[in-house]
Length: 221
Image (cartoon, rainbow, N blue to C red; front, side):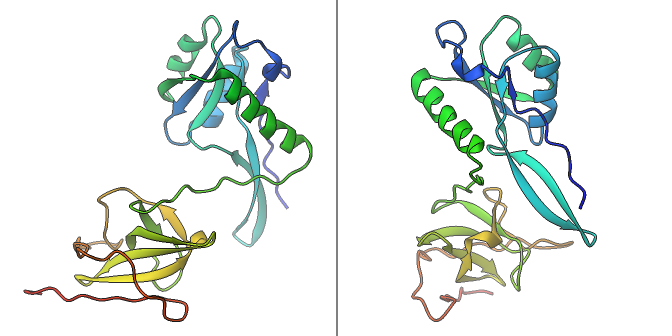
C-alpha cells in the first residue's frame, strides 16, 4: 500500500500561541493546486503558516494509495511578519490576500481544528453546495452532465436540474456524486457537444421513488 508522505502543515509548532497583535492572521487565497508548493516555500523561508490536511485513500491501477490533501482547498493561513508578502507573491501561486477582521475568532476556530486533529478525529472537507450552484455529475448513468442545485433534501441528497436533449429533467442524486462545476457551463461533456438551455420554471419536482422527474417540452425543437 503506497503512502505519500504527509507534508509539514504548521510552522512553527507554536504558531497558534503567537500573539495576534504582533503577528496578525491573514488568509492567502491560492491558485488551483498550489497549496503544498506555497507551504514548502514558506517553510524554506521560515514564514509562519498553517495548512491543515486530511488523509485520503484511493484506488489507482488496482493499488490502494494513501495521500494527504488540504482540508480547505485553495487557502492557507499565515501570520503577517516581515517579508511574508514578498515570499507569497514570489511563489506565483497566490491569487490574493484576505484580511481577517476577527482575529480572536479565527484563532479559536483553528485551535479547534488542531485539537481535533491531535485527538485522532477524522476530518473531511464538506462541499458547500447551495441552491443555484452549478454542479457536474461524476458517476452513474448521467455522468458527464451538468446541472444546477435546486433543493437540498436532508444531509445526503440534493435535487439537481439537468439539461438533456433540450428538455429539463429534475432528478435526485446522492450528494457524493456531485462536484462543483462552472457557472454557465451547463452541457454534456464530450467532443462536439452542444449547450442546451435550462428550462425556466423548473424549481423543484415531486419525489417518485429514488428519482423525481419533471419534463417540460419547448416549442420549435
